Image 1 (cartoon, helix red, strand yellow):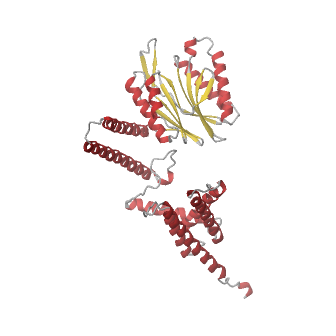
Image 2 (cartoon, rainbow, N blue to C red):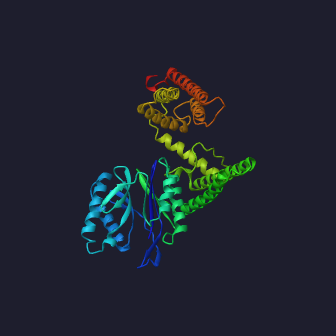
Image 3 (cartoon, helix red, strand yellow):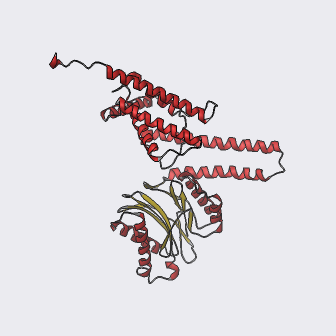
Length: 429
């Protein structure tokens, strides 16, 4: 037997599968076998894992899907769904016609990503029909405890990281309660822009986290239900629980950050957030690392200057700052109960921030030193995660002041450049 789970997340899907395969009349033979593999098949990425009584029949159908999808010319996910349904029906009627009903009783969880028309889906099969996974789906070893666990822990807004934790938590419980399910677990992340299989080293780390956090939450659950505990003792256990969980999280964030720095921050391309947005990084590099960082920064500045395409024109900088200001003003109105900023305002601000960032990183190239410093101060203030104790509105007002000051300096430098006399033309002197 096997166990496969598909989870719908806010930013994609997570599919997990164990690696034990049983065979024999009484499931007396057990072998380790990787069942969930990401395959590029023509215009699609496919990851399909099946459960049933005949492993060879499951393998045969999986291979048929890979081959025939690779030869197909269509591009969209809806077309792929219809195609797979027809393949399932044809396989049962023809290739598997001589097999018993029990052997043909197979169920698959199939993940798909369209390479040329970004989109993705995860389906669970029943006979020759595919049903889209809109929350969670299980197939394989049947046990009401697994469905019960998912029913209680699943949430509509799960992130990919939380989906991975939930999938691994389920697989850990299943391995402890069944001889038919065994690690290592394969985890595949599915998003509209791609499909990836998680590395075993990362899965091992996540499994350890699941076990540590589960033991802490189980202990705290018992304390919460024990009304006989003195309030002071309950308070002590609650504080200890918070301190322990916070310590674990801090350690894991620091470990993840260290790995990303070792890997090279410019090469990081994770599908899900491992380090909270706004985290302040205090990094003391070695002399060799500091040299590498300087060289990277110098190369970035050089590349940006070589590819400069008007980002440092004063008029364009002023226009981009105005777009950011319009969006900030619209957000202030929205917080006061007014309408939300429309899509065009948000898109214009996003484009403006990107170009302003490039202008800022170039330094005093086509703009003056004073203008470059003004942009640096603006970004320092604009990106700051701070609270002076006056509330969100006051923080926003201070950011708007920094923005207005930057606009004033840039306009002043632009006017100074416009009024400066042009250099004499030697041909006319």
